[in-house]
Image 1 (spheres, rainbow, N blue to C red):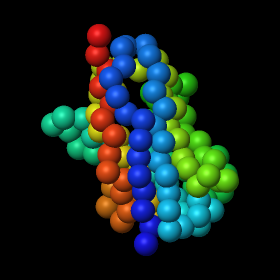
Image 2: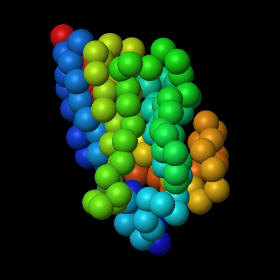
Image 3: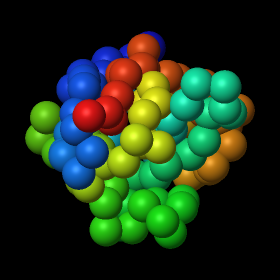
Image 4: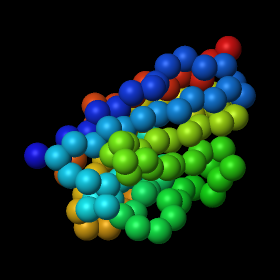
Length: 123
């Protein structure tokens, strides 16, 4: 059974950085697609980025370019979301999710989810 476990959330000041980690078990990264999502209070869960089984990772929102970057360590079966120059609007619970089909910005496309990591950006 595929399982995802996240770590690395916390409180950070505006302009700061955090790196979220997502450990996958039950499947190797070259067999699954990983999506990063976030859900701010009172808002819908939205897609942040995707790591396909092959090829480059990408962000769904151009406004995150240069600030958020997803990556993988295949040897550790881990994926990461590096977040730089954080803003208060980035405050949300961040999730990693997985499917075996394709990258998608729709949360319903992902049957496997991590438990979520709270990221709070505040001075």
